[in-house]
Image (cartoon, rainbow, N blue to C red; front, side, top):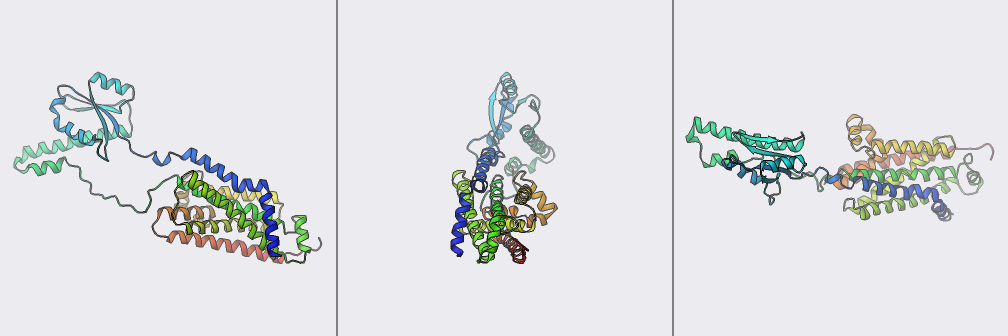
Length: 381
């Protein structure tokens, strides 16, 4: 009887076109829109060499040291090239600046001068470069004046050389990508959409909610067994929907996930069960019709998705800093954070914390649903 009801409920869920749209096709459509909107967000902060012009005049010939340093930071063979430099006449430099083909130009008279037509990061970098050079030249001149014997070839190299006292060390196996959290949060939201199925299934066995529920209550099969088979069917369908979404996001859209397939499947399973049991919890606690329950669920899901950073990525960190308890009781955030932990961190500690909390939430939702459902009695049907 258990497997007969499981097969029956499986067919009913799959044939519900409206429910299949919201749990399967709607998240895929959102994923496509996210990809179109966020496709270049990862490369938006990449530094590009700054277009710079240098005026070649009679004074330019006397600034060989400066042009030598400038050529070094403009060498395209370097990985850390700063400037894309071109040497032109003053009229040409003014024309390039007017047409916004360069961020500024440098010309020489008694001093090194910078000309820009607006303020910005690139213009600040140009000014900082020139100011640093002037400061080093001033230092060398002062040493020559005060203690010429102290200035040797090694000291000159050290003065003109940029020394970096910081070492860049990777804290994880992946480079940070701000776009991935949007997709991870989308999967978390899709997992909670399983709550729609949970509400539908709990209504189907409550006599005061549907005619089907009335028939279940007078049937010889215990309604807890019927409910258990319905939950298994619901979890099966929702897990399939999440699997399709995950496959689409990773293969078609190229979003990076961890290579640990087992942990990914565990996250999908924990998220799906949490979503379905949350739906049964709302369905059993709220004593209103199914439309009201769905409205409450949509509001709760959208709020959780917003707090997890789906609409505004910085909201996730605001919540974590200002009110961290919300981050730990928000299933969407826990699911998204589990995927991000697999993607970014080398150790699975945070991942297992998130999965553990999801399991606790599922147990709480399931326990409340079970005890309330078991205690329901009807005077008449």
